[in-house]
Length: 252
Image 1 (cartoon, rainbow, N blue to C red):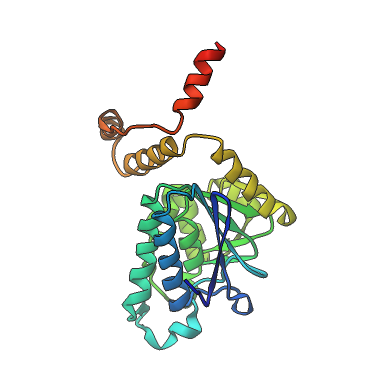
Image 2: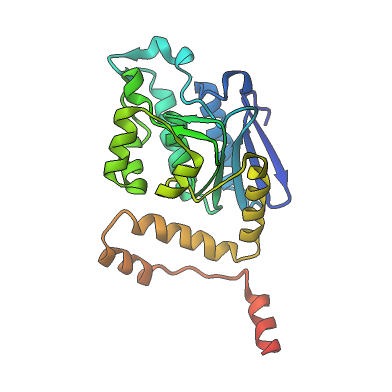
């Protein structure tokens, strides 16, 4: 499929999507979000793809929702254009339920809707000097992609309130310290680190990882007791390490 605002590439079992509106700092236009949703749907169905990486082209991951493109639909602090809101939440669901681990590589600006998008991912690696923030209150816009629920679950409610009330961005290094991202690295090492993590994941059972992803996501939405019940009752056949196990037995 030909895309206008994203680039989709493959490096063997790794799918790489680049948000590709660099002149607009990859601002999230309705078309970019729609294309991203379509690409993710295709990747989720592709059994040959084992890991997904999403990054931004040019100087930023994304400056957030494209307010210029969405200005006419902004009424009373809410976007009346439902399509981009629905597409964004569908992206969250696809990333949550797809079997592949999804890694976000964040550099430059990552504000508001882009921060919400970032939090959809399983793993996040940020450049140390990235600027990550929530500016909903700066523009008088209500969050609709989960900011008010995901951010406090990751960093705690006090820090989430500070970020949303002050609209002051934090660095990638600070984001690592408070648990908003997995790792912060120098900008020049960002893509290399992402590929290294993807290749480390590829050394392990993709079926087991997909099962872990399901169990983590389901369990985090409930109590410990219910989560333990989900784990004990979850059954799935793991077949992609059969030869490894046989080899292990032979070498004992």
